[in-house]
Length: 160
Image 1 (tube, rainbow, N blue to C red):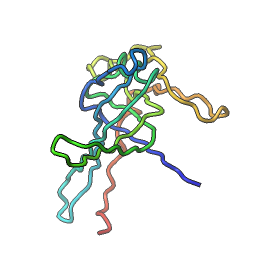
Image 2 (cartoon, rainbow, N blue to C red; image 1 turned 180 degrees about the vertical axis):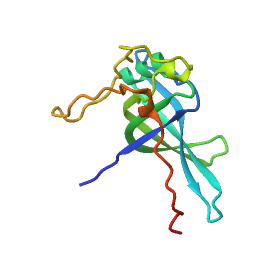
Image 3 (cartoon, rainbow, N blue to C red; image 1 turned 45 degrees about the vertical axis):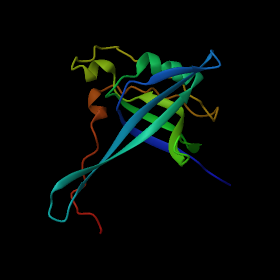
Image 4 (tube, rainbow, N blue to C red; image 1 turned 135 degrees about the vertical axis):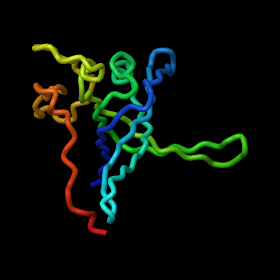
């Protein structure tokens, strides 16, 4: 049995770029940052940021074009893919991407703009692949904006 699965929560570095393959097949590409906070042995707080290349096809690409913007907090689920190509210098170049199956907005746009959520406000349902029919549908929006606060940082030092 094999498994190629990636799950990320992070912020978009740019607004998704949309292009069309064969005139009717949209593909969205964007970069996403994930940040991991930690403390040094001296107790200094540091962050490690990783950048990921995300690719979304068809209806998911249209969702990205319509609803996603730079700086938004999103959940991306998909699989890793590495591509290679020959450059003009005749060298082989490689890139690793995440082919998205699911993208969910983790915060409403109004929360990013500093406007409070109004009662009954909701976000559009994202386009996503549901691999299991018996999975319960989950709303990408929590009832309380405070649910989007990051988890508390662990107090103890790293084990190394």
